[in-house]
Image 1 (cartoon, rainbow, N blue to C red):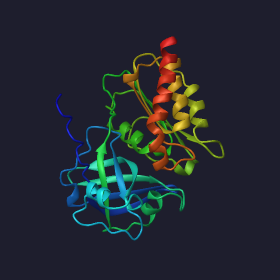
Image 2: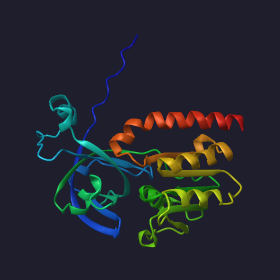
Image 3: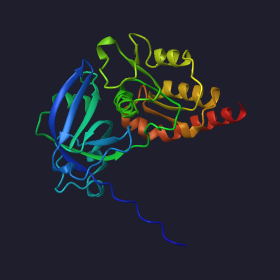
Length: 281
């Protein structure tokens, strides 16, 4: 029996903060640059993401930074933790990587970092990953999500051909969180207010009259409403799996560490339940 190849070591990149900008009351933009992006590329998927690395306060790592070495030599409580963010834009000419952060005051790790970080500071990250891009062969496109999915939805809309048909639904807390997107597609902005996250989005998509033809759908955000929209698309409307990009970016009551630890099992259980429903439909 041939030996299985060893796991490829994960390479961490180092970038510098170029500038920051508050886009809306709860959305902060951070633009990264520097020599660490010399061989970086994020131009094949519109949902490209990177995993930012945050070390515990007071912990210093040896240079050059080597994540595998850190995990071998440092106790687990001193390992960097990761936070995942969509690539809002990548400018290869100027080597600038743009990330947008949802801000909840002092809550969380990456959000507070994004609000206080200054130009010139360094940040380490891994990636990019990614799997989705609008298929020009689709008859029309459906994009739906909350604030966490807004960077990917916006980038996807900007990547669509000018003659593409698309319908986009984005739920945000209120009108002050709407953003201008450089696209001919009219975004349906849904204002959450005091309602549970995803409730307005579910109502809007369920009440939408789906056009004829093959649809390619991108649905991301809080795991609870993503589950319900997946049932609608996969089970009730019998849209093929290959035409769906659906995933929970986060889950109420969980930080990213807790959600990522349980996400695989959650997705597998939901997919099994709904695939059996789709087969029976």
